[in-house]
Length: 288
Length: 326
Image (tube, rainbow over all chains, first blue to last red; front, side, top):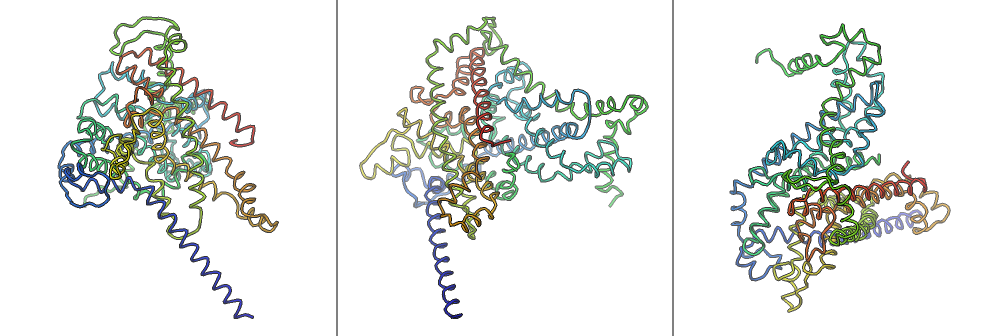
């Protein structure tokens, strides 16, 4: 009897295993189809223009060329735009985290006059999309003659309601005792903020930093109206302008290489922060 | 090494910054004479000040300015400014057929992108299995979501390009079929942009649902199995109610996001063909930066803002009635 039982379990395990394999295979094929345009983009970037003129719909990179890529990688413009993006998004993120965490500390921990009305004012910002108010901001930068500068790409959105809201919620959850202990040791509010609150909030701050960075890096509406000179394009806007300039007839492969060049930093960024991005989505969405 | 260490530097920075901290600051004497709540107010304002200034300039003030400018004829260089009362709104609501078309088009995009949530749910259910290597697939489906709109738009505009310069039409050409005017025909272009949006953003819904699925207690399923519930019944009575919160959240987010569609349209169709994919934000953009009528564009923004506000309040009320989201 016992032998039969073991045999049955073994068979069941085999069936499970086979089911699992079929399942992974099916999902794999679906994922491949889903990503086919990406595969095609990569392949196309390695095909010479003449071959692309003959037949565009091919997944075989033969004849093979790296000419598109050497052109893209040698383009000082693209590297400059990449540099702009890195600088703008990093500065934007650091500035946002700094000023928003400071404000959030006050809302979470201090008892002061006008606290409720001020916090309400912050929450109002959650309901106002940038798309509804970007024209006055545009006019402001026009008056200050700040368009076509990197500052114009950094400033809007630094004072983020969402960041203050998220951080306030999180700071409130930090046990008061820790802070009181530091206060006993003679630490001031600012020191407490830096050595108690901030280190205890690393998970939420990292999540916020990652999504602020991504959001700013990918932003489109603001940079496309503010940055009109190629000196200050971000890589995202630069790709669009190249695409417009090259059209899709003459430099097809080159354009595809530029698209991958644009996507690459974010793909690397994703794989570096993968775990934090996946868990951060729940934090950032207020689901958890 | 010299005597300067990282710890020392940090300590020095802390000490110098504490000039802002009333507890140890030079103006301590003055500060201590104040009543405690006044002291805290003083400190709090110090903490809020940098945020407050920028928030006032870039969020609060523009809200009022938006309303103010919308009551004017206002050209982009700040020239030719004239108060015209509600005339912009009158023209928008009663006569501007282009705006009406853009409004309808936006509603259409909202309707066509709602299915993204259900596809996201499908993906989540598909990938919610403890199989080794499943993470790779989650990554694959999520990755497009963090790409810039220009990358996504460029790839899909190439896939669907109307002439032989697009992947699908080049493929069809081999069989002497097509070309299908994907981006040259209004309804098709709308579908193409919606599909691109699906491909781009479905990973987000998927991950939210996956997180939601993991929050449903396994004990509920075990209990249901004991009671003899089949898979469909388990799905219907445990999974679906368990996902109410993420579902409500995604609905609100999706509607608001689709109401502001701009990038995909600008990159893929430029509002065309014949204004068929022109959305509200695209219309605001065109009016303000192509025709330089900021006053008129701002009036459109006011209307969009009002509609969005009503929608989010409605949705909040609706979901609260069902006991979600509180």
